Image (cartoon, rainbow, N blue to C red; front, side):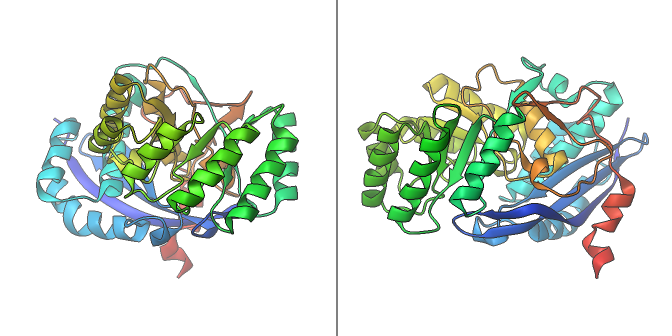
Length: 374
């Protein structure tokens, strides 16, 4: 019987290919918390947690993940059965409240190890895949309309992406709308455009903004108002035809139930870290399916390890109407795996090897480790 012998968490800082401008922050590097879980049978599993803009986006951070795993979760899990993923996660849930990012990284590492042990992918452990590749959009977030259009044209020509998300909410409403409308005019006949407001509009602003974007042919609008204003989301969803997607308002299955009950979203953005793990994502997806809410594979802009954790669970979902935004590795100048994921023909090709299907590049991992940089 394999037991958990050690758990280590390492902070890794990777540079981005360009500043990534969001409503709440401009990202020039990504900090990943890499979890390595070693078992008594010699098998190691890896997991990842990261966040968007540190604490400017939400209440969890890679630094917090490391602290909570090292101080609270590791002592609980050492000498537990490595093959009993549900048992390990139930033990954590009974002793540690919240901390979904850290729990998701640990669950990923347990599943990665067990997949390697059994010689099957994580998708196989979750019941099997219904697709081997996933449609992937790209976020246009340089902060410059002309540059965004040039970037999109190049990616269309390379057949890498044909759905583009625009980040709004950093400027005034009039400026946001002008930016979105210019890009929609330039690309709308050849690509699908969606927008993400990251909660920055008041409900009255959102009503005006959504009307303009709907008339222009924008396909989807993500989290236009505060996550706390579910009644407002329900009013907007009832008023407009263009689908509204819940992101910040949506973490796991309990949120899925309440949002569906209130009619407060047409689409759910599924995220492994926010949900607290892959199994929780599957539960949330099942609620959405039962309620007739469409599904979208979201991201926290993870590196390859976290991206592939999402990819494996999204591969198993019978319906994924809005594809995914698993482009995190493409935003990085460097990575910490020996082989980067392959993106072609507008899709991410998911590795078919055991577990996550990737191997850590030990040299890169150490070079970009925050401990080394000090």
